[in-house]
Figure 1 (cartoon, rainbow, N blue to C red):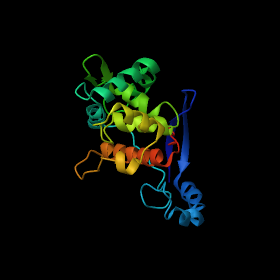
Figure 2 (cartoon, rainbow, N blue to C red):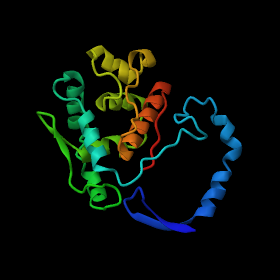
Figure 3 (cartoon, rainbow, N blue to C red):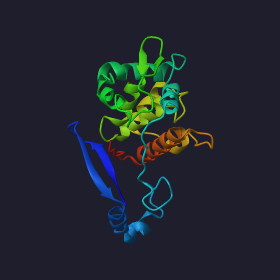
Figure 4 (tube, rainbow, N blue to C red):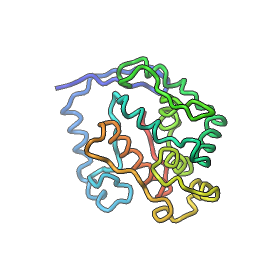
Length: 214
């Protein structure tokens, strides 16, 4: 049994090849002798062999895009709101790199671009996707800020704590506990995104980058 697998290369071209299921099973079996190293590994987010690896399946649901936008800080939370606005202005998040992906039914359930009015600027689902997944490996200093933006750690903070988040100069488990939980009624993509943020929190706690393959 086989199936066609299509991926987008770093150069933006599409690459399609036929994958034979038995070949994949044989390759995966080569890892079996190493599985015991995963027991007790701090990076093992899912608590299973090779639980440091996860995936968000395509197409990304419209409900999940709306959920991500709803997590962003509004003007009633001035410090994270100002930090987000500054990041958008200085780093130039415009979502343009996501437009070709949205034109293809493979990646997004919804072709229209959802957005959220954050009073002084509009933030779109394309910008969210770019900020989370199209900037390469997520370094610890960036991970803490993303967790703050998407409401995965408490946002009732003082200015000095933002520096602690970026520098990891705090007792993370005590001062910035992870606040997301996967619920039984979560949309599939929402549940997978929550697991992604769980992995991001673990990487931030350990001071290591979260590697992405998008």
